Image (tube, rainbow, N blue to C red):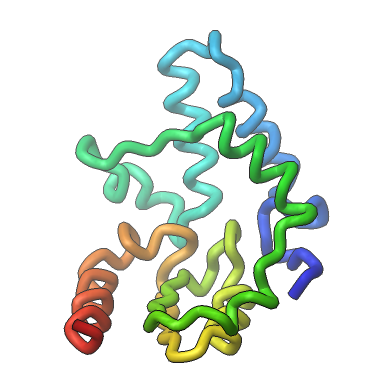
Length: 153
């Protein structure tokens, strides 16, 4: 799948692309006051939640969410040329692929493609998750990881 999917929020044709880019650009400002940074972070993260209204419950005081400007700049540049799809078939280790059905950062089609190309891979799709199944469906996530590891150890 070398063409970006419309479902991906980093695709210019995605309806929320401009909103996401505006939030990211705001977060890159090193002089942004802390409260403004928190609000932009919250709005950016809500774009990647199955239920955006659950933000305050999911991201409680013990869950920290930050964005690395260096990493996002690198990602934005490299995504145009970085493709390891042809090498997926070379993976020898048992592989667990977990994705949210509504993931806007790494759309489900990419997880399905990885599962098809990686030998001995297992795919679990979380039907009530976007980009954060480990938070949005935490109990099921932990259970699936435990089942996978118990079968591979």
